[in-house]
Length: 414
Length: 144
Image (cartoon, rainbow over the protein chains, first blue to last red):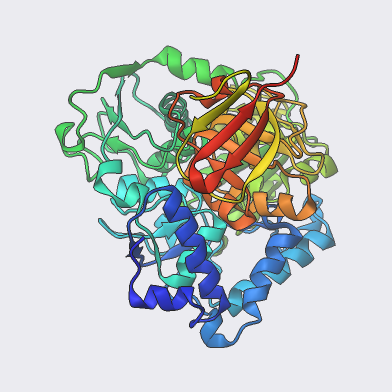
């Protein structure tokens, strides 16, 4: 790879061991993906929950935190994905002091690096959305697919270590989604069934993600007859990225790089129709009507203030079943707004619990499931039901309305 | 593909990590450390996975592609630190997250095989040596 003088100095250790590690890491990754040089980034966003990090990962970041200030501070604004422990509410959901202690250590290390603890996977709704053509280094697949597709920004999936490297060097290897050639459509879908609610949008995303099938496939979607809301396209993208590892989609006439099918090179691709039966087939993997439900979860992605309002309104005047827990995960900023507007109180009066700065699947899902006896889990997120099977849950999918109705009934209703 | 009598050499893209040798564990399925593994027990835990219940510890995993989220990038490092980790992972197509995780964990990883679907070219039980810097994998067939 071609390196600038500044990059060569980093590699030689002239900017300290953290930046030396970072640029070396980026060279290894860049080489595997044939990057020719580095591209400056305006922001980095790091996924790093203590369950993924473990003791080893926390100690790794702490080793940088112990360096002198000028060697440890990140070079560009760097923000964080959801935490694994809500330090204001962990014992009640079955998390241990050891988990909280690991989380506290990691937060202290991040703060020493000058990282902004935003603790959110909806930064594009709440912090600083990237703009068209903006090169960024984002973690969280849902953040990346939204930023690439809806904002027209340019990011690969940057896992925690690579986002940290990008924060330290202020750049990232120029490969994949930073290049025009990897942003053109490779597969084409014609939607025959208009999505209705958030869950439908998630199901559509999941169907397309599964069909697309890899990071290097870029779907172009036709047939959507109106612009979705930010929350709708958030669920579409998050599910597509989760089920398919998809980093970018185009929606003709809606997303900024696809004013037409031709603009993304989709004209010669054979269209695959997405019908009601495709949607039903996906839903059937996450059924469970009539079964007792142990926990209802609203998360993945964290809820916007509009979703907080919608959940709160559905909770009003009702009470959950004694054997069904309800967990709602949102960002710290949305939590504060939701508190001020009275939505948290409405959800708590229903018997639900609102967590700030976490996301359910990133917070020791296996351990909290075992601690609380949660097996049958119900959510309106097509992303989370895809993840939690490996954590010992039996996940089921339903609309937001049906989730609340199920929480009241204590069993899955549609 | 070259070689005779059970020893073959496969060409792939240049990858990450040091030269390693191990026994292959193969499936034409996809991979995510978060979605698919019980990392404490060292087994595939998602019931729908083709390798559900099988141990990956010390194996050369051969899979189709990476899927899902970004957590695997940290998890490979954490798994290596505890010593319950595959020796190498071979893909038809890696994604960025798996490559980044391999770089941090110093785990051997290669992808993009010239002779086609690597999950068909290698069988479970084969003895596999991976040369990431050279983009080369040597396969010795399991004795029956």
